[in-house]
Length: 298
Image 1 (cartoon, rainbow, N blue to C red):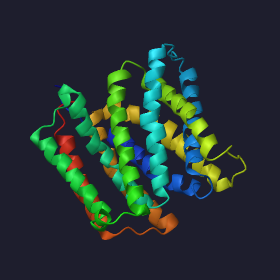
Image 2: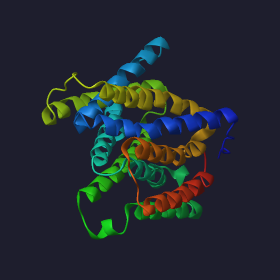
Image 3: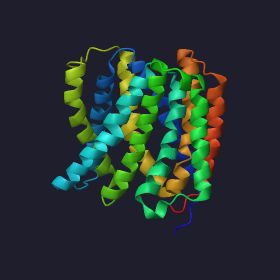
Image 4: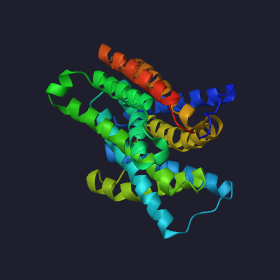
C-alpha cells in the first residue's frame, strides 16, 4: 500500500487549472448546442481532439499499437469514456442548467469508487469509504430535488442522462486500469479518441446528417475550446497532475469544476440554480473529501 502523494504548489496550480478548463467546457458545449445537434457536437469533440493527440504522439515519436486486442480495448474505451457519456451529457444540457450538469457530473468519482470496489480487490469499500459514497449519493439526490423523484419530465430525463454518463465514465476508468495500464497514456487517449470517432461518425450521419462547416464564429470557438483545450489538452494535463499528485488527490478536481461552471453559466447565460443545488453540491463535496482521505492506495 503506497502512501498518498503530497500536493506541491505546482501540483495544486495544475490541478486548479485542470478544474477551470473542465469547468469551462460545460458552457462551451452549451454554446455550440445553440447551433449544432448533439451528435454532431460530440463528433466534433472527438475528431479534432483525436487529430491533436496523434500530432503529439508523432512529435514525441511514441509507438503506435498494432495489436487487434489493443484496438479492441480502445473501441470499448471510446464507447464508455467518450461516445456514451459525451452524448448523454450534451443531450442533458439542452434541458438543465450548465451548473447543475457540472454538479451531477461530480458523481463520477462516487460511482468510480463503487465500481472499483466491485472489480479490484485492492479498492475494497471500507466503512469510511462507504460513508463517503453515501454522502455523495445524498448530495446528488438533494441537487436533483425531491419533486423530480415524484414527477417525470424532460428535466428529470436530462438529469438521469447526466448520471448515466457518470456511470459510463466510472466503468471506463475500471476498463482502462484493467486493459490499458501498460500503454503510454497519450497513446491510449489518442487510440480511444480514434475509436470514438469511428463510432460517432455513422451515428451522426444517421441522426443529424452530414455536418456543415458553415458555422458562426462563436460556434467554431466553442468547438475549438471543448475539443482542443478541454479534451485533448486536458488529457495531457490530467496525466501530468496524476503523476505529480496521485489518483487520490486528483479526485479533488471534481470540487473545482462545478463552481467554475456555475459562475460561467450565470454570467454568460443568466442561469440561476435553485438553493437545493448548492446544498446538494456541499454535501457531495464533503463525501468526495472523505473518499479522498479514505483511499486505500494511490
